[in-house]
Image (cartoon, rainbow, N blue to C red; front, side, top):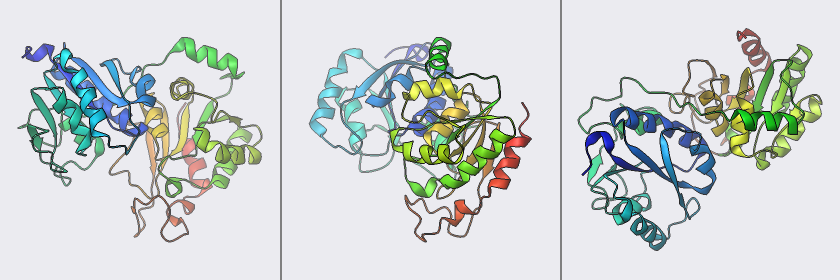
Length: 341
């Protein structure tokens, strides 16, 4: 086995954008513990460019399966193909049985992960997960990178910090005729998980109109799935710049870095904004900031904590979405104006 400082480490990464951003805290922790380590990540195809913005990551190994696909034979063959890399340890972030197949097939001597789905044999360093101690997702990730007898929760969580490609940033500004002559507020009105995480579109539209009237620019970010929401906001606030569906994920990283602050739901782009050093005004509905807060001190958390919250449902079980509808435009507007430029 390699010396502790020069470990070769394989991490099986998560499947969601926000989770992958938070996983950078684990990568940083591993690099601090093993300064010369090479850290490779097994990850979905979409995440390769994002992981390329994390200097701690040496290589991304594409998982040739989509989320939810089992295909144990495919996973086993991928693991076999990695045997020649001679990894010293593997850290398996997901708690599913299938996620542990690749490291076992790669014959990695130490395979670390949380107890779950009868993974005995696939893992040989099985950690208990006490959710009352490790209350946040990022704590659970970082703890896997510590010694098995380390005190928990971790004393300090290194925040994610994505690298900005200045050349790409300049190219995108020219491509979309953007400027930063006036301060930019970024809106991310979508959430991949479902509508129970989304502040109403008409609220975003009214907020955009008020900010533009106050002398700000508003840029709208999102995936192709968010285009209807962003188009509705732009209809209410015609001077808002709609970039939804027009950029790759890493392009959004570079453009979000130009914003002075962002207003967003609990989403992957929220975590990206935090990891680019932006001030985040984060709106929580069906989820909770106790579990997945943005990893930054520059944050205003807007969460009502109703008796039905958090429900963690994709759609509001009550049908009224009061957890988000009762967060007023006035309140968010005041949060935006209070941010120091």
